[in-house]
Structure formats: C-alpha cells, structure tokens
Image 1 (cartoon, rainbow, N blue to C red):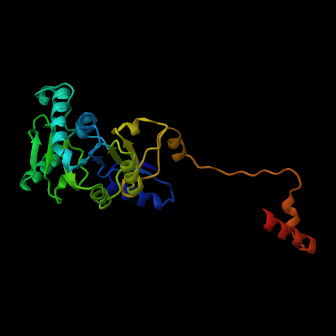
Image 2 (image 1 turned 30 degrees about the vertical axis):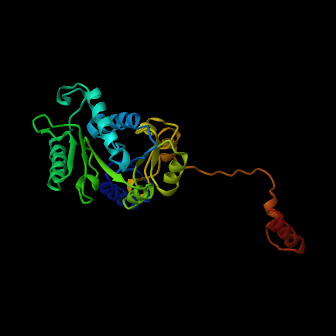
Image 3 (image 1 turned 135 degrees about the horizontal axis):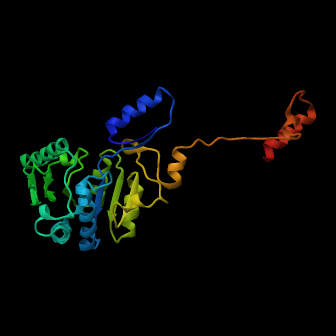
Length: 281
C-alpha cells in the first residue's frame, strides 16, 4: 500500500494494512525546517528560500515550513526576502500571473485562521498578511517574533507564510528541531563544513538539501520519503520500483550438494567436517 498525505491519515492506512499484513510506504509530512547560519550568502539564500516557500502558493509537502536563522543576520535576511518577493511577484502579487491561490475554500479558512492566531499572539508581520476569500488569495507573508505555541510553528500548514525563528547558537537550532517530530525535509544554508556536518550528525530527516531547497525531490536518483512521523519507506526511480516489489529468493540445485554430508547418520568424520566448517567458514 502506498499513501501520500498527513500523518494522521497515514496511521489509519497503516492500521488497515496490518489486517492484511500488507507492506506500507507512507509519504507523510510534518514541519520541514530551514537552518541559515551566519556564514551563508544571505542574498542567495533568500532568493532560493523565497522561491521554494511560495512555489505553488506554499502548497507542496517539502515546502520550507520555517526558517531558523542566526540572530545576527536576521534583519539582512528579511530585507533580502522582501527584495526577491518583489522580483518574483512585483509590487502586487495578487495581479501576478506567477502567484497561485489556495486550492479550496476549506483550506483557505484553515490557513487564514493560522494568520489570525499569529496576530492574536502579537507576532510581527514583516511583509504581507492580506487575504481575499472570494479568490482564495493569501498574500506572500513573512512573520517574525512568533510565540512557541503559535499554530504556524506546530501544525502542518501548506500556507504561503514563512515564519522566522532566531537562534543564538547552532546547538539551540539543533535542539529546536529535535524537540519536534522528524521532518520530511531539512534545508541547510551554510558555507561552514563544520556546521553542516554538525547539523547532519545531530538531526534526522527524510531528505536534506544543502544550500538549496526542494530540489532533492526532483532528483529520481535519490530516494524520497520520510522518517518516523514524516513517513515510512522510500519512492522515486529505482526506489519506487523496490517499494512495489518483493524480492523473492530462489535456490535451484540439480546435482549432489555438499550439505548432504550433514545428513544423518552423524559419524565421527561428519562431526570433524562440521567443526572444520564452523572454524573456517
């Protein structure tokens, strides 16, 4: 059984499969974080993150859910994000042919509720926040100073809103990620091999991009899937073939085999042969 969807429905699918002892491959979701350290090229980083975040209006499973950024480069990063938003969607994203809409009224209502929750918690809207229900439009939005309990930081959202969370040390960023469920994707922006290795060695994710976002999904030479809450099993390319296959082992013998020497009766010669086999093989 192969299923793509939420962890909640994935558990239902897995439960149903267990009644038939059927294997499952579950591509689920969760929160996919992006770490930006102070060594990163901030302008190029913002360019890539803004593209990935607002691709299909934020409605892709490997969309960067939030940015964990070194406190010292937060302001520079936000200014670069504003620049690239304007480059991609001009001054009025609502009129841009390159900017999408929310897929259904139900999802639009759910997503606008997340924005209202952020406002209630006095988060700072760095850019955006406008919505229009008749066309299911949500403006590209960047939010900072979110409280830990904000829904945008805790629920799988599929929304064109980028929360920004600052950290003072890389250990804090790693601890933040590890305090939550395993993500489907993790993105790292850094020039430091030491920092990259530290993040990779101390976090777990279904897939990871270094100095880019989303693109690992498009490479069918790479296995795609989650870990724990974000999924079970892998797909794409050869890995998808394996997901839908069962390796059947076959042994075929036509003539006398050496294993027949182990058949009864167990003589002293066969005992000696068995000891030699155990010792050397």
